[in-house]
Image (cartoon, rainbow, N blue to C red; front, top):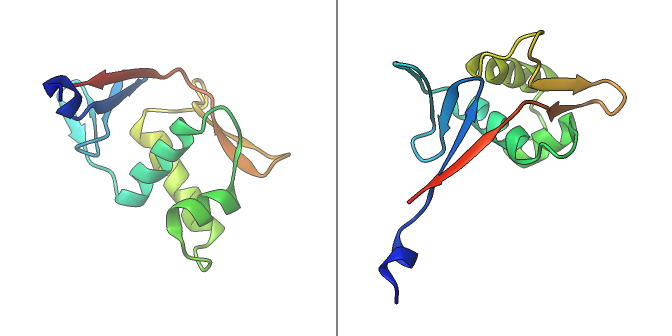
Length: 116
């Protein structure tokens, strides 16, 4: 077996000069490192990895919270904190709400890196 095949790859995203380390579950911008709450990190990653389509609030609830009692407000709060974590604002709008589909779509530019 090849040793190169045995090493795990670490996936890293970069958005708005914010580096997202999937293994460490943290975001870094310059010298500042931020480790968001697990549900915020999971929401951000889910939206990035499904950026080819709009994700409904119900899909976020079913995929990430696994709790039918999770309110729409709690999901909105996680989305808003995810936006803050990547320095998203009204001028950049990487995470947009789609009122017609009642969901969110990641529309920002994403640089993907895989490091061995």
